[in-house]
View 1 (spheres, rainbow, N blue to C red):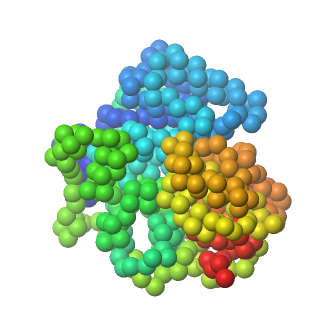
View 2: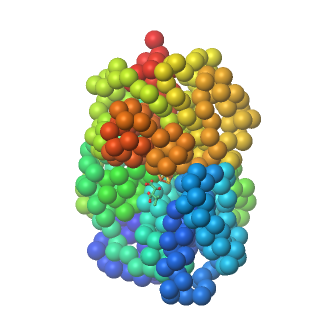
View 3: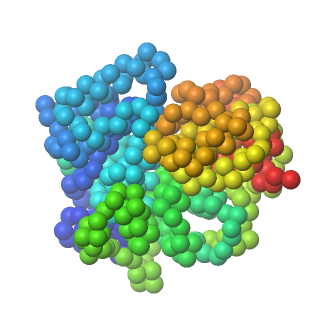
Length: 420
Ligand SMILES: CC(C)[C@H](C(=O)O)[C@@H](O)C(=O)O
Ligand code: SF4
């Protein structure tokens, strides 16, 4: 059985296999300032209550602080939902991107996580089953605590080799190229191999985050010592709680499982990767696009706004200046990341270098505010989507890359992975 088959079997209490339609109880449900109002409106049609206010997370991240009257009205309505049903896991604007908040506080291995956002797949990094739902489905979940799902097929991706220059973002872009934007439609992408085994949680979250860019239902990685150590450190879990999680641990037997497809990627001789306009699977080694002039660089988002990403960017920006023609926007993915970055002096490095720091949230990722692109402008971004017009004008251009390539390019004024 594949990892998702095992997780879902454990959830329902009997063995389930790809293609089975199952009803499941949701362990954790989430909507943000964009989707809470829609779910709330739909919920009102079906119920006067929510199934369990303690299992619901509402985070304001997409449009914070509100930049239009419409955004403000939506947040007002979402707040009404929060107050009416006594949602305590409420995170107001500035606390962070919903997915980062979930990762820092609420997701555990083996959970079934339902989010009103397509990048909910991120949380498969904990060995959970996590996927995005539309607002009406979220309303049904809020009303009943249940949903149904068809058990997805699995593509197994093993990452092997050794290469200090390569980050999780380069790897996932390379996987996008391999699988293609429709290649994993309604499937799970199960990551493993020696590189993933040694990867920290920040990197694993980046890998799983982009499963949806291949049409995937979710990305997933088995929970291991790295997962448990993260939970110990970030969530202050005690030995007893960790022991309990370990007892429930679900593992994959790589040799025995049968997958829909198996892919192995050796990173040893791989270059940094970059997705060129206008699709995330339109991926090339950086040398093939080197020299393209850029107007803006964005370092942040649920893909690459974590502490390790900011540390990586700071390595290159320290003591240097952002190119005079480039706007560099940096947004920590959460308040926790922001405060740690302040403590470590990273924010100091960024501001000195000439970057603009915006409050934790999605920022310019989806083109709503804080760095909208003009006609013809080129942006190099650490986000997950480079669809035409996503960050502004329909004739603007988005390239996706790692924090390292983003930072170096911001200094040079053109796309490159080389400082000198
Ligand atoms: C606005 C929201 C529903 C959307 C999503 O679901 O992914 C956004 O987060 C995005 O990244 O495009
Ligand atoms: S950071 Fe971007 S991709 Fe992530 S949830 Fe926000 S808008 Fe969506």
